[in-house]
Length: 413
Image 1 (cartoon, rainbow, N blue to C red):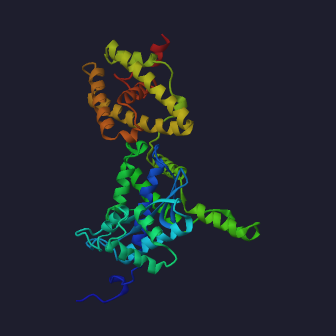
Image 2 (tube, helix red, strand yellow):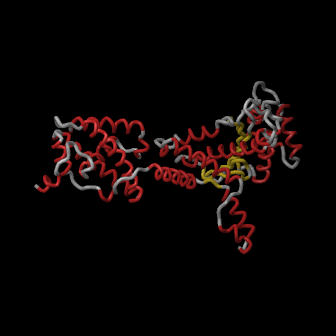
Image 3 (cartoon, helix red, strand yellow):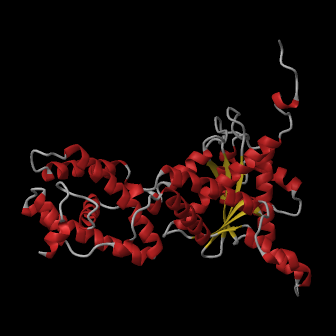
């Protein structure tokens, strides 16, 4: 029986979904460009989305780079010189040169996911056209035809301006339509403070950074001024400033986005335990309990050193993040360590002999595995810090290295 034809089970011929896909591609490319803001040696100060160009880069010396991003479906042939997309891009670049002068833009990039055709050195090879322009070969008939074509579209321009634009233009082949977001994600994982992050963090940052660039490109801005433009002294000027500001991507906005995502994920993944403020002082109970388990003096001294190291790290967290965040990190790691220690206790407990050393070796094995497999969920603590948390738990009487006994009585004595 054939399925009844309905709008639900048939693809639309309306290209709207493909258009949205291409807009998202441009936003993803802008997001990739925005990562330059995080480079300490970068000369980039601001990124604009859909402001004069698909992507407009402002440098710290107040010069600009204009970027046109063009896309074609997978499998389509690369762009050729006389393709409408190429001609319109150069026309746009020439218009900038006419409007802003030859020193404002230092470079123009024409970006295409399908690349550019260069099988032969002829008029269809735009790379060849650019080479002729950069060699200032104005007598070449191929270059001359292209210049005359642009002059037809922009009669108020000049051969000099068009040559200047072509000399500043570079061709860039970008990732495929289906590869751009994974490319951005991969680049994000190379940023120093995200290298050790879980993939969930970086995936969320990837999506939100693209959305941020999409919003910047579509005049989505967030300001109470929208409601009272009409009563401002210069309403049109204020509106223009707000629109331009809304198109900006800054270093601070990217860092804030990363911070918000990582903090949200931190909160959703954290396990609960007792508070950092309740952390026990000293190692008296630790020494007594480990002695009862038959552990050597050397192992007990090392456990004390580990406890000191962990406490130092916790103090560092508190100074860096504030008490609330440091405490939530501590509770999370503490619960993980306590779980492993309790499991080690359960598999080594014995009525026949002292089992402290067997338990310690089991704890070490388990904590090493956790540390190697999922360092990011431990906030990049060292393996020794985890053993230090184990020592803190011993002093808290959450962990035992022998069968339980009256520890308070022995402490008092």
